[in-house]
Length: 321
Image 1 (cartoon, rainbow, N blue to C red):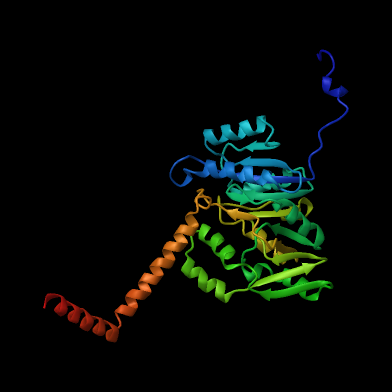
Image 2 (cartoon, rainbow, N blue to C red; image 1 turned 135 degrees about the vertical axis):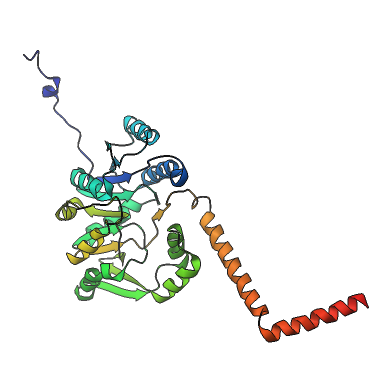
């Protein structure tokens, strides 16, 4: 038999969620080897997104079966009010399985999804939402310009070529350094990216005074929750590698896939090397290796090699005569 009345009956007001939910997916199974720095990366990611997002938001974190140290950190963040919604999965459900929970359960009208290894710059959220709210029929907006596969932006370009009040330009709008630093963070080399950069182009759109780039990606995006719902649930039978179907299916549905024109999000991967300047150092080493290799090839040319040997012989004779 009930004793007394539930005090909650006399509460007149309940908390209202923010219009925007930032949904972060995390997985750190242990803190060694590949994952040695990933807890520090997670902390930097969360700190950077809060620093000056430009709009208020609630933070939802889905932890996909991480080790105790990581879970303890997230629980402390929740208890201290820095995470509004925390989901701790017992086992790794894969990225798609986590998306099924996060994208369906996030309370905001707008969901800003991110992997846990992204470094954000000021105004990343407000700039993303500006594009989302200005352009029609937007599927997703990524807070960084980079070159995505052309087959995933066919619907975006089709709309831009036929719609009124849209300016569409093709060219090299992404700066080389902006292009390079992102691809270096994915483990690619400067040499292979020079060829890609030279042979590909960007598409810039201006609509109602707002500029965007054609393209987006599943590692970080902002979208209306109502737009994402028809794509759920994701049928995933592997932990990773299948989430690109969201990029493809959005394009096939005729939705626009757009990016902010400035680099407001950066992939850190599994280390803080970008913040330590290691990408720039590696890029410089590669340039030096390339120059040294070119010099060696020039010196190995028959006529030059023969001439240098003659000069060397003359110097040798002068020195010892």
